[in-house]
Image 1 (cartoon, rainbow, N blue to C red):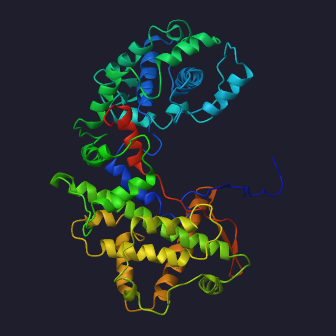
Image 2 (cartoon, helix red, strand yellow):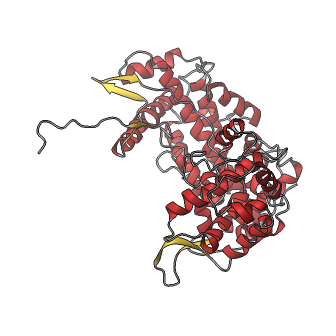
Image 3 (cartoon, rainbow, N blue to C red):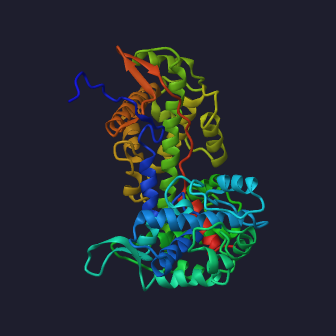
Length: 487
């Protein structure tokens, strides 16, 4: 029996993700408008590849007991490893979003002539390049985790109606390769010529995989509504995207351009407002609200970043707030009532992006962050405060820190000096919010504190680096391009 005191284990992994707890709301909102296709699933090839792996494992891989662990480590990731090697050995292959290519490139450099044994450490995360695609295989109906009576299966089974046709179409593309015939089911080194042949047969852009493309198009965009997948908003989002994408190069369009299109092109009150069919008006305003939420979020984060960088010595909260306001650069009078700034609050795309970029990401000169954040926030108020065509639900995303709550806050402070509105945001939507979010993370065993409070004074622990959250529309463009739906 051990004796003596037990020492608490206090070391926790530090996390910087969503340290104000306001980014996740926008991400969940996008998931409603663009299900399955996420910010980390831009290449539809991986869905077809994953489904074929399930099929081949069930049909041909000899094992005494099928399990997720055996499938993932000894089968799927092995095929993925050699697929990555094959594409790296293929001149001019499409390597955009080719997962695991860094470690595989090292293996090729060490052993340029081959043969190549399976390197289980080429990619640490589960399922290799398919890690973020696996859940979609179930959602889209390619595999199932339950039997016909609804009982859980020990290992997912491919479905006859949707999974098998996609797997067979994929297999038809590689069944004549030497890798398929002689190496895929055996844990032996693979010669370089075999991989070079495989690289010519399989590529991320799905070249020559027309049947796979058709089956994936049907799975995503033919009307479906069941317990796992309701794609009505995805179809509308696809149609909305098709209404403007012919004017752009799908392979070169940027996230900033997408923000401009979704937020400005179809907004009311614009002289150059583009027209849309009536059935796309609702999805257009939904995506406008998505981008509005992104602008709203990054403005709060700009304030947070500036506050953290001002916390160079320990300060109580009032001193910290006053120091931030005093040290900031201002071209506006903070004693002026809020409503005076709302008349001409609209900001164009270029100006909006410029002033955000001045203090976001890795910028070190952030003395304009408070004023710049206020400018964009006031423009968000002007954009949405009187809108009747935007579903209120879209603006309520984020609960107590949402565009709706912000509009209410501005209404409450309309006759007050702008400094009072700013101080409220700094205290309640930044400092207090961060403390709440960081405490919740601490309960879950993660250290998310960017500040520390000791004897009533705050200390800086870390700096925030605001940036725009991912936009699923970018990945949808990539998916549709690979599936021959865009030029």
